[in-house]
Length: 454
Figure 1 (cartoon, helix red, strand yellow):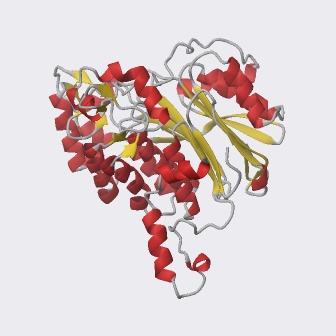
Figure 2 (cartoon, helix red, strand yellow):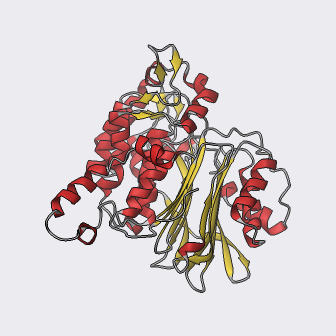
Figure 3 (cartoon, rainbow, N blue to C red):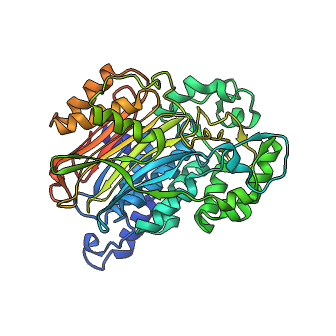
């Protein structure tokens, strides 16, 4: 089953492998002649990746196998999700990440939640229209890359561009979300055309080929020109003008002035280990409150929030660096309207208090005494805070990961999908102790690269 799955979702980097293999024929052992950036460069354990959408995990696998860092793989996963799970992720998405860099020994929050309405109208005179959020994900991923990336930026965005340009079979994860939210784009002729099959008679479903040419063009320009082009270049002007066609309010000055924020984390001690939550309003503080009070069954009022419109993923590299992220579109397919010529869905602004409209919860456990990764959990949607707090408790109680996640998801209220990864004896010192778990209610995928699959 694994080989059939991998064959179906063939790597966009496969050509790199073949080219490299041909180049070294007759020049020695290919296994020793591979260069950084070529899939197969890392021999043995390369890391692990978990996501609610399978294709993004396979892209992360290739990045880590090529010698990329956790930050590289996270960037590639985020852009891939914009093409493979546009219901809950997209170039217009915001979010929050916990980032541990093994070299600097720092664990930080990278905050890029959709800004409130006023942020999109910086420098604007009074005008009518509907505010839309500044698209924050591309600039945030570039900030992550600038801090800890190893491979070329162009290589990290190429898989997403190829998936959007040449088409990709719709995954079960996307098919399930479209089935629950297709009505969201019912009044948008552009989106209806892209996400329809059989001459427009039905929404695309699992196995149908989904092609997104406008999105491919935008990702291609971001690949060539860098993320800054969406904020102070040709893409910025294109985005603002196209948004205006929908009656959307956003200014070039607001695009130029936006930047993601690096912040300290909220921490809680647990023996020799430190639990990290993001310092981001409800994103971290409510999960931390649940943990600190031990009231892990309390209602946070978020259980009715949909499980579509937000998602999560995580990745760890062989050095022990880790990135755990939650992304939000503030609703299924964002605001339900696609910005013309961009392939990007408009996202409604966040609340004035800077919080997310969709519950996002992420957590990470580190042993800073020896600079080792131990555990991470992430969930998005109703019940997310409670699920992540309970997952952390399960790790602290030394409950086997699969048992812990299964118990939580079988009893959890709310539709959030919970994913987790654990290295009980520490990463990088004991990669054999690493395990990953996905929520059985979804159709995600977890993979230990160079290790056992789950």
